[in-house]
Image (cartoon, rainbow, N blue to C red):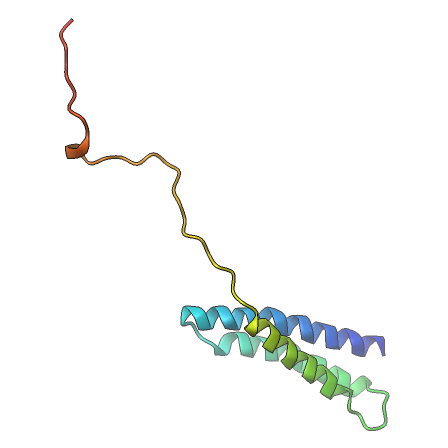
Length: 108
């Protein structure tokens, strides 16, 4: 039973992680299939393991793992993305030649 709980928690955390990547890809206009496919690659063996190790008579615990995987994906995708502040350079800026004050050379 502990293994089944572990499978559900792995599916949940994988869903949250790849849901965030899905949201980031959606915001950036990237490929939405890659995060969903990667999540499916991780969750599929977990569901197979759950079916094989399920001690209940009806063999229904795989639905709990599938539900945790989908819930994690939804939570990860719906969490707000952090706002990225623009990069500010602290290096001194060079002025164009025309904007620099005129230099005076004094002969001493």
